[in-house]
Image 1 (cartoon, rainbow, N blue to C red):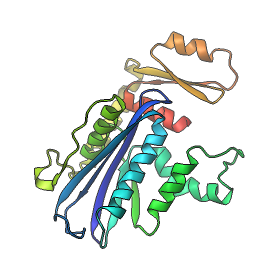
Image 2 (image 1 turned 90 degrees about the vertical axis):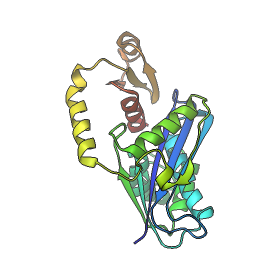
Image 3 (image 1 turned 180 degrees about the horizontal axis):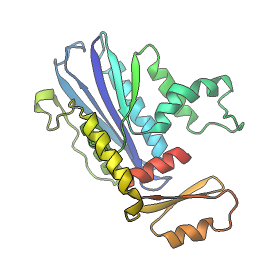
Image 4 (image 1 turned 90 degrees about the horizontal axis):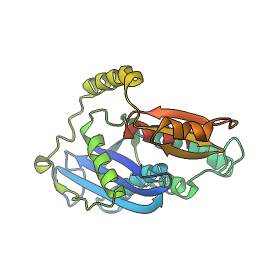
Length: 246
C-alpha cells in the first residue's frame, strides 16, 4: 500500500505558557492527486498561552487536516511518528472509554483538551493510521526537525518552513536508523543518574511547575500530601515528565 510518513511535535515554555507545534509530511510515490511524485511539506504554528499536550494534539490535527483537504489523497497508509505518549495512548486507548463515559475519566473528572480530542478523532476517521512512538531527541531526523520547528515557534522566532521536492530537502527525512537511535537512548538512560539536572518538575494539588534548582522544588513539595517531583536532565525529558503527569 502507498504510504505517507508524518512526524509531529509540540512544545511550550511554561505549562501553560507560549507554545509551538511542528509537523513534517513526506512521501515518495505519486500518492497525491495533482502533486509532485516526491515531496516534503513542513507545517507549524504558535499559541501565546497553551500547554505542551495541547501543542502535541494540534500538531497531529493540523497534519491530518492538510492531508485531507490540501493533498487529496488517493490510496494511502499513514505512519505518524511522535514522542508524545499522551497523544498515542489517548487516540489508541483512552478516547474510546472517554466517549462512552460522556468525556469523563475513570475518576469522573472532565477530560482535559476535550475539543481537541474530538477534532483529532474526526480527522482520523476513514484513515489507515499507524501511530509510532519515537523518543524525544533519539536521533530520528524527522522528530528532531519537528522539535526544532515547535520550539522556535514557542520562542517567538520566525521559522522558515520548507515545501519542496524530497530530493531538495536538506534532511534525509525518510532514513530511519532506529537501532542506532535506541542504542543512543539506552546509553543516555545509563548516564542519567550522573548527569546534572536541567530542571526539577513538581506537582502539588494537580498543578505542575518547573524549577531550576532542587531547593526551589523541595520548598514546594516538602510536607505536601500527594506531592510529586522528578529530576529532568534535558528539555526533552522535562517535556516527557510533564506530558505523563498531565
